[in-house]
Image (cartoon, rainbow, N blue to C red; front, side, top):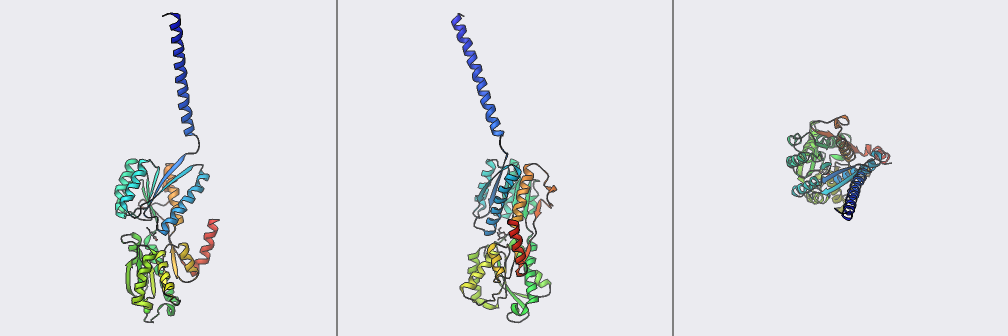
Length: 358
Ligand code: GAL
Ligand code: CA
């Protein structure tokens, strides 16, 4: 090897070493950059339908709380909301996609309560905890995996509280309610989606509480209006033609349907007092109606509490803490109580709501 070639080889080796050092440096700084900044908790939230008033407000609460929590925790919380459009097929695809994107936690408002097992098995395979909310999976499904949970409100309590509101009015204002004076409470029921736990149980319990107290009751008619205000208005229009003021009490499985009944009263220019109308949820419009006396009562479905619990549970699971330290968990489920709201409680309730918001 002559001198020239030796020099060339020497330079080549030096440049290669420099190149390798540079690449190592670049890789290291890129890694450090990635590890810099707060960690990100990624939560996929699947709603059964974005059209649903109560679910929309629950999810809004969830997003707002997550934002507040970001600054408190020094963490980023990235929420991806998807709308199942009332189709389990669409929702399955959305959840598969969230799993492919490797989200940390899945929160699922399942379209079809009987379809949870496949979702749980998929989440389990991917080791992503799955929190169902508001639409309760079948118990055996929920018990399939220790990282599958349900957060909701006990349906039975909401039905009984509606019944209690009706019973109290029957006892305190009999003249006003027993319009035909026959000593029997004539009622109709607007039901939510068929097969939903809240539909089945509220429908049964609201009147059971009244009759268990010894009041005679007569069901004039009942039908589903799928939680929907317009569908409820359509049903009520035809019931009013058939029964008119024979209807003394309207039990609606939720507030949107109760408001549909009010729409009909106003459209038909029925003279108040209207029949006793009782809903569930405590949506802002229903609270107004309770405050102005057009609705007799509602039952608070604690969307704020549910959202808060979902968020805290997500954080616990993300940090691999035991959620049982924060919550009472029974059969993988966490329960948020309902609360009755009539004209008696409304002022106090609204003040509490304002204070909590400020
Ligand atoms: C119920 C609520 C309804 C509707 C339904 C959806 O708890 O009362 O208004 O939102 O959930 O699953
Ligand atoms: Ca009567």
